[in-house]
View (cartoon, rainbow, N blue to C red):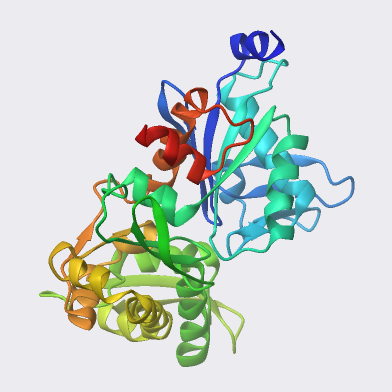
Amino acid sequence: MLDYLFSLFSNDMGMDLGTANSLIYVKGRGIVLREPSVVAIDRENHRVLAVGSEAKQMLGRTPASIVAVRPLRNGVIADFEVTQEMIKYFIRKVHNRRNLLHPRIVIGIPSGITEVERRAVQEAAEQAGAREVYLIEEPMAAAIGADLPISEPHASMIVDIGGGTTEVAVISLGGMVVTKSIDVAGDEMDECLIQYFRRKYNLVIGETTAEEVKIQIGSVFPLKEEKTMEVKGRDQTQGLPKTLVITSDEIRQALMEPVRLIVDVIKDALEETPAELAADLVDRGLVIAGGGSLLRGMTDLIRQETDLPVHRAADPLSCVAIGTGKFLEELDNITSRKPDFATWYRARMR
């Protein structure tokens, strides 16, 4: 009866709690919220001043009394209290700020995190107002969201290049046969660009500028027509504002180190894949998702390095959130009180 009453006043949610961005899926409505995973805090009283897009605009621009932080690093919680406040903000925004907020929440988590880190995510959501919290590993959620045929006795391979981590999985019969996770993804690419400008041009740029450069002219494979862009920052020697014109070829060279690590982890996963499943991938190929998959030439580079067909998911930015939502939609059909993915899969196959 209590669960029924709560259900009348709450919208159950699937959450892709990403290092760079958070997406919220609401049962029956689809994805209703996309916000940067950034929180602005007053240093003196630790009061939250802004969350999401408004807070991201403050990155690198705040006075001494305000700090804009990303409470998640490499896909895991770096600041428990701030993450809790961020989740609470998302719940209230989705529920139109009503006070009686007790939704069930499904959260995507990196496959390589520890049990302590898993508990931290669960406790942060519970203390933020969740009635029940369920966790699903991000590569599995991404595969479900990308509509891969994970239930078949054939290999499906997903590569999710997010903000803090790159997740690789080979899936068959509803289970992950091979999984790999590394702390190299979009944020590491941004950091490489920051260091490149500092080292080569003595130009200091911020995270936001580095991300803009990556999006506007970034590539990992030679382009038919190279691009140029003005980059503004502070001269490290003179301390004055400075503007440079940068080419996409330069940015490609600067991004090669983190991109090479991503390609290597894909190859490592392929090396550990059983022969029969590896044979399936020759024809079926692999699917890439996440914001990093949108980098120009990513499909071409992976195809060249693996000799496999490479496809980008139809909605690469939303795959994990959609996957958590599909898990959420099936919760009422599962008898287990706290189902994991295996329980969900078995119930779905009945």
